[in-house]
Image (cartoon, rainbow, N blue to C red; front, side, top):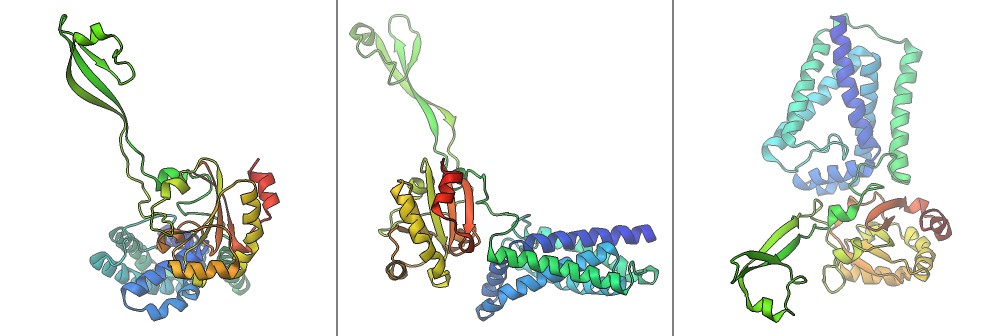
Length: 374
């Protein structure tokens, strides 16, 4: 019985620790998920509470997981876990049936689960949680009062620090599609079909068929050409067409022209300044970047801003901050998956994500040039 209890609380505890941590490192991601649920259930007025709710939930989940793993306050931790699991099991069942959002976000962006997968996961965990509650008489605290206090405070303090760091800077671990080292051009741009086209001719004298390309066709040899009879045109596909895995990232200019290929497919270094909503962006971050953009322009390195705001808002904002670089339009949701800052700066080189910065950490251009642009 003791071994089964250790296995049960360790399994459930580690799941809670992992779930709480991967969401805490990216508190804005958890906030966006809460807001998505609020919109689905007609609770848009609750948006302003999404961020504190995300931080508190991650802290409770992580701390509860630590308590389970180390056997701290076994009765309290078991009952709190049962209450949380009961609530979220019912919620995930309703989500699985109604499918209001495709991903519940229980593991943030680290692990994507469908609503049914999340529900089945919760059902399995509930078995272990119920076992812990039903065998509470066999439980014994692992620590005294001081050890219990230290474990809870250190666990909660650590995870809150991780969340605050993710808000003030960038997540300590980046689970987003636009993470450093990713060739994002292969994720955002479709792969065009590459094929060789062959012209098949039949030799009237010998009856043999020969394949030519437009370059190898002996059109200057009039005698040979007179003996050739066209049969058909053949295409041999070398690389088939492949749709972009990230299909909702589309860049448009002020005239509505789609320029995703020109921007993301640019060969060389370039900077993308990202702000999904200019009305919610930190204006001081934009003001800090003006000198940076001017220096990049001087070195002939493209510098563009991407936003989900409407053109009228963009024009007023550009005038207000005296921005000399162009602004292009991208869907707000797609921009939220680029960098967890508004504004945030992204350095691409040949379509590869080289570095990302939060507006609180915007560097000097000379530093970036020395470190990344040599």
